[in-house]
Picture 1 (tube, one colour):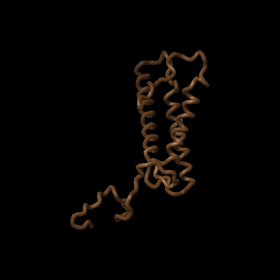
Picture 2 (tube, helix red, strand yellow):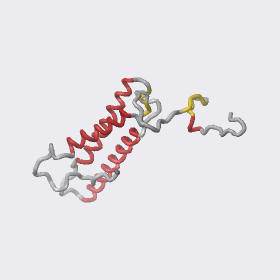
Picture 3 (spheres, helix red, strand yellow):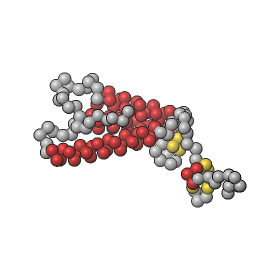
Picture 4 (tube, helix red, strand yellow):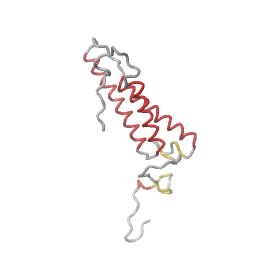
Length: 150
């Protein structure tokens, strides 16, 4: 209970386990601990193994976004209506995965940030750069337009 002149804590300030017990702490600066919350409450928690799994998840998520951004599923002579629906579906998946990666980075954990950057970098290297593209590539390298997020 709050005393006179004190504001009662908002429900978002507490973790509910039947009663108000622990005040949640949200980092607002980068930190380098393995005790992080990435995307879901209690995940990965304080276990180093699950923290490593969360870093691999964010890394693979970023690679998947780069692959979707540079892949070609549609043939040039495909039906325009079907092609439009496929492009819309792929854009929906790409934006959703991008937002998941962004929310993971918003945990302000340095390891998660580096995993996302490394995943996007490696994904672009393999799927977006000219290193692995054939010289006779078509004028349009992807079915989706480039992301305009930054």
